[in-house]
Image (tube, rainbow, N blue to C red; front, side, top):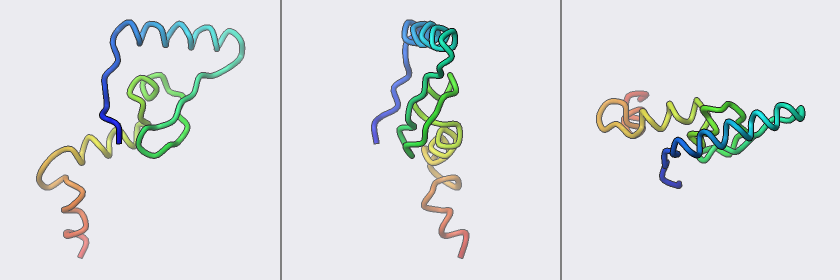
Length: 77
């Protein structure tokens, strides 16, 4: 997958302006989660380019040790 790149403050400000304009027109800005492809519309999710569930999943899987995905299958047996 693509590496998660945190957006700059200028990007966040521009996104907020676009969302305000879209809202005034009765529209919603959406995007797709970079991990699962689900449609996302929450400002925080759009900024992170990932839905809340995927952000939490991938944050946990980045840790080495007990929370890694590899160890979950071993514990289930």
